[in-house]
View 1 (tube, rainbow, N blue to C red):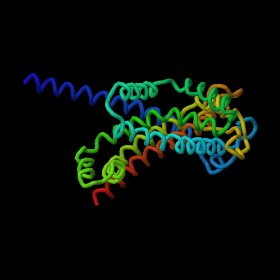
View 2 (cartoon, rainbow, N blue to C red):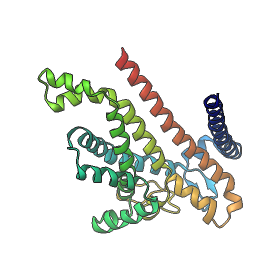
View 3 (cartoon, rainbow, N blue to C red):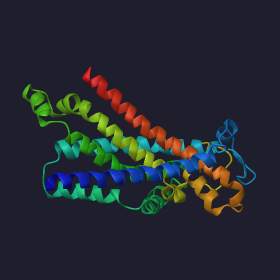
View 4 (tube, rainbow, N blue to C red):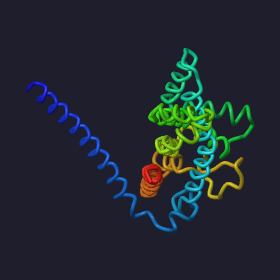
Length: 283
């Protein structure tokens, strides 16, 4: 009887916590949506800012966010997935492997501002890439890398060992067994972790603050070595640093709504790709 009551109380507490979190999340999203939806228009999404960002749109910020996210994906995803495959499939159990995993877990918790300062030293100064799209994208790639490795490795651990052993027993090489019997079943989880990590990186301000984001840049970047505007930094400036915050507050809410929409699109795509890939594997 006591166990049943303890189970009911525990379930009630967990349910209450979940409802409370969803309630606060709903209030925040509704506040941003109700105050920002009136600003959203085709001109707002396709025009450059004018008159000190008090007029016009946010297209340069949208394009800059897209370019930086693309570089982040090209840098972090292959490197993170191959690192996870090595740690889970090839690395021998031991102190060195445990230390590597511990370092990766610790890097996941490092504040983003630290990555921004490291990106300045490594990419902007040492590699002489300057404050640019490329420097910012590589910095966000470093920020996303621990998440990518951790998510990919956890997805690989869910594949039963018998899948590997069966392929090896038939004479397949280790890499062939991984490629044909392991990766197809781990890809959905790996993609989910990668896209969620990218969604987090797309909303970061601190790493791009020092490595390439511009305060006001109405023209589009002509190359990867130019400065750029980005949605998170644009929102930060409008909300805290603009000379007329009251006037640009609706634009700030509209920018926040576009950024939320971008992150929601990435999260939804993760769910969609995972579902479609699992359906294809079952068929």
